[in-house]
Length: 327
Image (cartoon, rainbow, N blue to C red):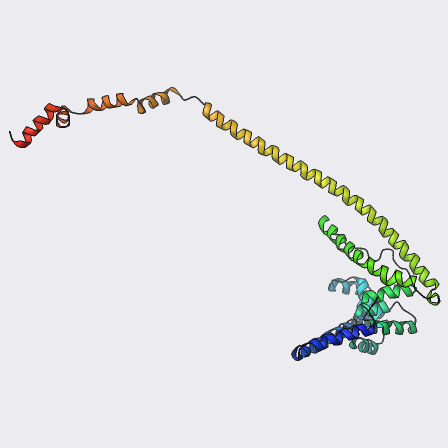
């Protein structure tokens, strides 16, 4: 069930009482600053809207394309600049100041989006009732917008709302729709409980033609969304199938490249091993690595006879001994 004003108030009071004294002072200071920020935002946009009205009325002084030029300079859409003008024309500045200064039951404050949503309500009595609900039930601007759409006749409503921006990349587009789908998925159980269940139990005296129109319009939109989701699901399935096939093809191609590279490396090694040595290399090899017997014979030929007698046979050793002893 939806939270009542008492539930919100009790939770806020309980939270404040659970704080330490010093934290309570910080909380009050922060709440005051947030209130001033919300109030100033509303008054700043209101005053800019007043100036835009003056610019439009004094076209001869400011120029015929002044609003568009102003929007371009500020990096805004012209519709945003005109919205400021409409805001200033729909409310009294003193009322905006007082409404923006008073906190809702949860301690938060209304912002300019609340005023923009409320501008669509032309009935003063109904507008006052909605403002009371905003304050008591702490409605966000989106919640107020939904309530206004469901209870107020709107003119020239565009199908599908604001045109979405083109995604900067395919992945960014998919991530955007994934997040929106998660929001819708989380919202559906809430709507089923707090809207559909409530209508099932609604007293006959509260059932009217406007409720039927809202139900019919909601069903038509949900049905369109269902069809669009089915189309998107089919496209994503086809994308998944193609991407899987491309990745599989890439994997096979990489494997073949590795295999080809390995075969070429093996062929190069075999070619090196099978390359015949030239005759000059064979001769040099035979000379450098001749049998050991030939090497020893060659060395004996190089050694002088005296050296053989000094280090060699028996006669040589005796002669050396005689020289040493002096005999």
